[in-house]
Image (cartoon, one colour):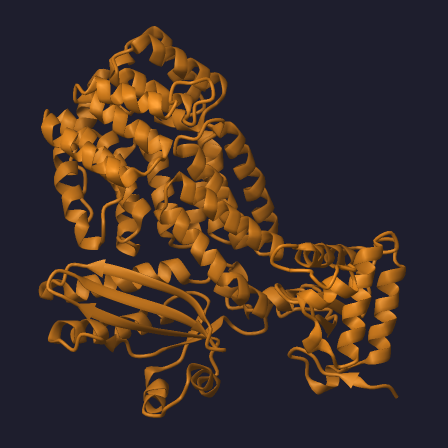
Length: 624
């Protein structure tokens, strides 16, 4: 008998002989899919033979580049990405092979993300749920009822009574809420405590507790600020993610703030894949490997400008290329395109189309994941398909709680003028994650759209208790101050925002709009000229150009721009029915025709002047 290899997490009875691996290699190389791919075939053969010879540790980028791709000894992998690119091609080609020609092969050869050492597995015929699958499942998922985690006591870094209280309460609350979170198995605190007296590194601690992930954190306090940092660490000791929350150090709100911090943390890092949430699987090595990149992209999507959203998109696309069967980053791609379409980018219809494509792909990968119907609903709403979008929002809400879905649905309802319902869902999102930048922006936008300016101004100033205020919230605050005839305050706020806005055209357009409404038309014109806001190749949407035109009291130009926006099916036209900035042209017959075109598929009743006044008088529930 030949030599046997025990690889990955295989049990002894699953050991694979070298002869069987070489037979599988020959089948792959002789297949129609590889016979015309000489370079990929050489890559595959070289790495498999080196691994069988016991030289797997030598399989680095430089060796493959010089041996397989005949690069010169001066070859620098950081300047020439040939090996990385070919490795991605090889992973895709092998996946295609095992989904078609090699679907009945008994052995599975693949490469983990970021590595060049082949992995050999026996193909299993059935999963836990009885469905057939190949061993690619083991990269994203492994057997187990959810992700196994442990929480270490948070450290009181300031050694004060208040920071100590926060550290204890956050630790207890985190354990409590993690136990209640779908897809997680939480080690009891009584099992963790005895080990804390031992001098163990995190990998040793994880092995003793038999967990995949560990939570740890610190609490700092000074006279004006409380800072809580929570870290998520893999069992090998490498950090997956770090989240920092800042709040006012109020001794009277220690329980409330602690609960909100824990809720926000869990909502951002919890499992989203339906197999894990239903405890039919646990996270595999591949999922844990790309998880930091996913979380980084989601943070950019929540907190960033339009440029940050574009960076988030590139990160989601990178993960999706590495792990094409992972639905969460695909949903992220869809949501990035939706956000870009809503934040002033030109040609937003193209972004919406790409959002639809990504959401359709995600639906094939994991139709039971909450994010899937939610991102599809967003794309449909931005296509003005109101009825279909609402059905999918309701489907998403039926799959479980999600702060992002609540916020997205609240915006959808606000576009239809259903403000009471919108506030209810935004309140739900606030309870889950009041620290979210997007939460604060949507909050401000709803006050603006519902014309509750007094309450909006008072509320936005209180949001500082949950961290800094986003620039977009400050812009809505300025617009509401103008509505209250407090133009000097609005002008001062707009000028302070300029220093923080950088060179982002959409933000500069909004600042110019505020300055124009305050009578500073020269400053507004200068911004419009400096950023080419009205040029043929303007960096902002026609809708944003129309708003700026109205602020500059050019109604005819605004109507013309909105007509073009309607022809191009711009996403931001969903705000036509209720944005107060459009009141100047609301009685114009041409505006009425545009509004009818955008809202024709909606069954909602859109307001006459009387109904808008009635809506204005309603009491808006203020998030606590």
